[in-house]
Amino acid sequence: MSAIERDVDAVVIGAGFAGLYAVYKLRELGLDLQGFEAADGVGGTWRWNCYPGCRCDVASMEYSYSFDKELEQEWTWKERYGAQEEILAYLEHVADRHDLRRHFRFETRVTSAVWDDDAERWVVETDRGDRVRARFLIAASGNLSLPNTPPFPGIDRFRGRVVHTGTWPREGVDVSGRRVGVIGTGSSGVQVIPMLAQDAEHLYVFQRTPHFVVPAANHPLSEEYVRETKARYDEFRRECWQTPFGFRLEVNPKSALEVSEEERNAEYQRRWDLGGPELLGAFSDIMLDERANETCAQWVRDKIAEIVDDPETARRLQPTTYPIGAKRLVQGTGYYETYNRDNVTLVDLLEAPIVEITERGVRTEAAEYELDVLVLATGYDGVTGPLLALNPVGRDGLTLREAWADGPHTYLGLGVAGFPNLITVTGPGSPSVVSNFALSIEQHVDWIADLLAHMREHGIRTVEPDPEAQEAWTRHVREVAEPTLFTRANSWWMGANIPGKPRVFLAYLGGVTPYKERCDEVAANGYEGFVLTAAEPSPA
Ligand code: FAD
Ligand code: NAP
Image 1 (cartoon, rainbow, N blue to C red):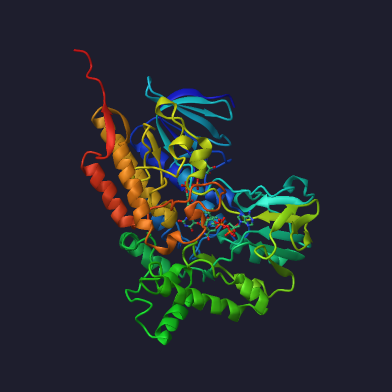
Image 2 (image 1 turned 90 degrees about the horizontal axis):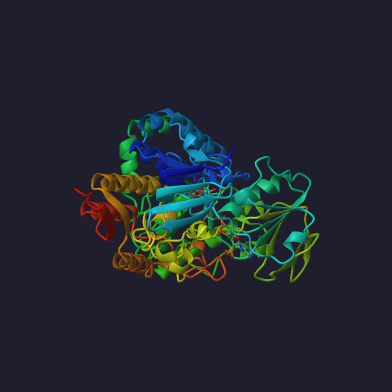
């Protein structure tokens, strides 16, 4: 295919949940669009992460688009938490239904985006030699789309196969009868480990920091539940909006410290049995008060000891160094039980860190583990990674890496001062990674579409945050996070998983509804906090 050279209204980067909806909405405005997607099709996260066991951890009937009321009725989710294949099929269906693919060029990575201040256009280039000039650059490039591959010494000499969960080969990886190692025990590791254990000859799990894992309690959705939910879908969506993070969670208004131990434990057990995120809603102060949090953390540690047969393995699996919930609460299916299998060994990297990857496998300070397949479940350069990898160049040659040298500065997670007409969907400083993404993406894209319509109506050429408004918002994001326990772990939410990354909480914790209200208020007040440049009056 020959390189594209064209002028358009907007370039959209990414064809996941966000890019697809952005193209749908902006096309409604009659804009001329060019989408680029590095993958060979739509789906984003749900295309890349085709590792065994991958599924969502926000319930499918909530983690889906609400904009298409017919689709809501026609699509029937099979399970409480849809498997990767099902979510990908859903996004493929959305792309077909709304004829969205034709706006994208796939297998094409945007490699450069430079603001031309004279022409007031973004000049966008790709690894296919495309060069597109666009008034707007819509970054729907994802928060978890840049896999983190730690620079383990020697990784290139390993004779076996190395795969990352975030770029899992579509044809699958046959592990039957093979010795497999998994590095990483976050959400991805916890999903893939029980699946690999079923087929591998032996599975070695290399764990650095144990995560708190609760049962997903995934199950097929009953016809009755689906029917009842569809019959009141608008109300169901409103219930999501009434929660802090956009997925339905009943938060008990009581403090964990005001009830008897018996009542507390009964509540934890009830929530554990319900599965999913329920445990953290057991009491109102779990994420606010260290002592309240510790009651919950200890309850889960005791559970781990109950489930895991070998007391030493159980001890190693028990997190003790950070509050529960301060790293994303991981949902698993048969995770702790997996360590009761004869063919699974937990290797504790805190006791003996990885020294190198050898030709044969992983060598820690204590031993060498011979492997045929090495799985990296080592996560992502989250939130800012994909944007900084692109490193757009704004006004006066300012690069995003320079602008964000001490952490991201944004206004509402939607725009960055010095980068006119760059719009970030679920950017840093918005609820993004602590929220139900489907809901947050729709809210952002709707707001963006309104902004672009407003600009057209009023003959406005450029929009960018006012630096003062941006700093006030960035401060606010940090001030909201600081008193919570969310900041008390070395999590990817804090940027702590990437050496040298500034340590700041990357998302807005103030809740999806207060956030939406703020965005709406900004719009109602003529996009206050943004600098809008009106068109020159045309000569008489
Ligand atoms: P993505 O789906 O990440 O899509 C971004 C796309 O942009 C990617 O396909 C990428 O290839 C492309 N791209 C990036 N940079 C470039 C470039 N320079 N040029 C061209 N293309 C580019 N969230 C939830 O709310 N609930 C869940 O249950 C949930 N489960 C998850 C499970 C996994 C395994 C992972 C990794 C994430 C999960 N998330 C979940 C977060 C998930 O990323 C979002 O829910 C959602 O899919 C994000 O959609 P998006 O379109 O913003 O980004
Ligand atoms: P993650 O939570 O960042 O976990 C990465 C794991 O790799 C951690 O255990 C980490 O240990 C380990 N690790 C990283 N670098 C290492 C190194 N150099 N040496 C040894 N261990 C190392 O990444 P993830 O599991 O991919 O999940 C990321 C996010 O994606 C999740 O929080 C969630 O938002 C989303 N996700 C959701 C689901 C779902 O259930 N729906 C599934 C997958 C992903 P440390 O903790 O010590 O750093």
